[in-house]
Length: 598
View 1 (cartoon, rainbow, N blue to C red):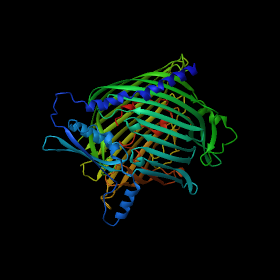
View 2: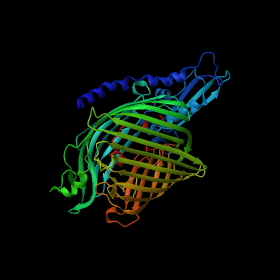
View 3: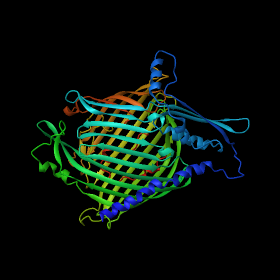
């Protein structure tokens, strides 16, 4: 029966690849003007695209550096920008489509600034000016360690605007703790000149291989009516359990080998008008989660050499979380979206503009397995909720996701609901004036797992949690972290070339053991820190940070001071929602991410 399931999935793959008609609905919608119906606002007679390089400065002390940066950067091609516009010459001039086009272009990481506006002409038509400025698109992440002397931990090089075509390509090599991975990833948001997305990833991991592929047509602004996704992934990896135990003065880790295979297909239809929309869709998914081998002990300083002798008592908790999954599921997706967008400046960057969704969005996926084809007999569900509210100078956003699986083969004396995961975040931004140099950010984030049957564990330390502690400190199953951060824009030096600022922050959090292996109740802990922030070029939304953090409670394992160098904010509205540690344990691949507009 397993072979029949794979054949069934293979037969359905071409559906996602060939189902391009939904994508044409955008162009059909935008290009059709009913015969005899005049444009009340006038026709667009000309569209001029002015795509600037990173820097415009040609004079001054550091003009040579700006010219060099421009030469090293390949400017975004006009055809890439034109393809994202929701209007063309001959269409009616519509301010709403102008704003939507701005927002679509602003969502790309290689574009720093966008301004689209119309100029009325004497003949009653409009000339539309599309003015953009590029972001520095080559990113390099070099990782070193000073734990026990200088050590090289890997690198990541990514180009987000390959040859000015809006495509991403990246290579990486990471050798840090249990991770020893290398590979390549490619992504294009305009596959074969269309609005389809396509991504491919190939690599090697410490446990084996990695291969992933996806083709998707996401909702385009508030215009398109269809979204489609097809994806496949296969990954061998170790699930790294942190413990508080030591051997010969070295902290022990438990490595659980696992192999995760999945195939997903989803089609979603959207109804209603902009700002008040309903969604309905169908999903088909296949998953196989297995454990090729037994858990091993290793130390933080040497993950290559397993610790001997084998300690069965220490491994018992980890071995109890080894439920295998093997299923084909058919699902129903329902959603409601009441959203409108506002622009804010200086939230997750110093002077860059970003779009904030206000209103509410709710989504639900329920998927039933087909036990006649595969082994599992269950129902899996995902619930998501987004809310955004602006009150004067305060903007508050909440994001929540809950996943669970009801196993009908569970013994009568145990709960049928398994692998219940919840992830919720509140973000509050207070900015007294749009031109103010100060932004106060508050974040509260709660994550947890209940009745887990597959590998799961959280930690309280790390760059997204208590920044004064390493990311392998304080394991557990339920976590709450609150952060207050003051972000300041200095306005000097090199105001026209870069935005420079600073930050002060306080993190407070607590871990509860839950049912995660090696979990502990920590009580309340805290850390404090400060840092330097930069956006290059000026007005960019990409933030570069150098931070130092200290634990408030003396702890010999905290090493008193942590230095963090990062690209992008650790948390904020510009980043995707979701805890990375929880993502290791979630078994689904199709979520309401398809609701996201591009």
